[in-house]
Length: 149
Image 1 (spheres, rainbow, N blue to C red):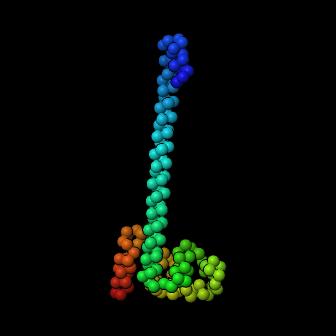
Image 2: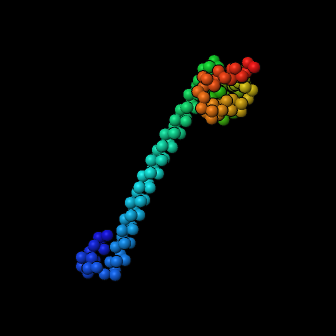
């Protein structure tokens, strides 16, 4: 832009300026558009991060609500949470510094209290809650009604 302005001042309007000025204006417009687009992309990323944090918090709330409603002990809740995170019995035992048999027993009690027979079934309870949008206590009441049938 400065070069085009200098050429215009020195030489007046010429064919060179007629080509250079629109190119310079287009470059400035491209910079402005790029800056605007970058700003909107950063805003979108912040919104997605916030939504992900909210979803993570929502899942945590759903898990805690279910664990409380099922009456899981602290140890049962710990092993159930590790199971939900995908840890196997050996990993959970190592992380909790307990025997694998103890972890298996705690998982069995947690599954029984939840009314499921496997890790996959436990996981599906929470996924169903998140997909249905039903708050955990209401969902648990519906589960209790369904299991009573």
